[in-house]
Image (cartoon, rainbow, N blue to C red):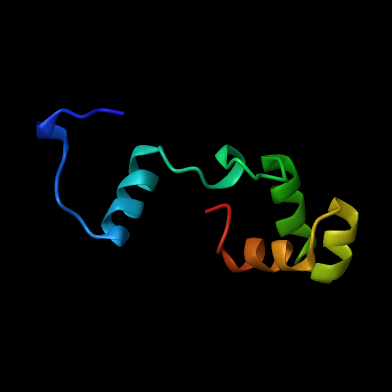
Length: 78
C-alpha cells in the first residue's frame, strides 16, 4: 500500500469503507477471499429472488440461505 503522507488522512471506519468502494479497493463481491459466488451467479440469484424462495436459490447455488438473504438485501455484493 501507499504510505505517502499526502495520500493519508484521518477518517472514521465508515469514511474508510466508503473510500474503498469509491476507489475500487474493497474486497466485497468476487474480490473477497471467501467469495463463493461468481458475478454471473449473483445476477441469476437476484433475478430468481423475484419468484423463488431464498432457500430454493441457496440450494441451487449450494450456499446457505443467509447468504442469499444478505445478497438480496444488499448487505453483500454491493
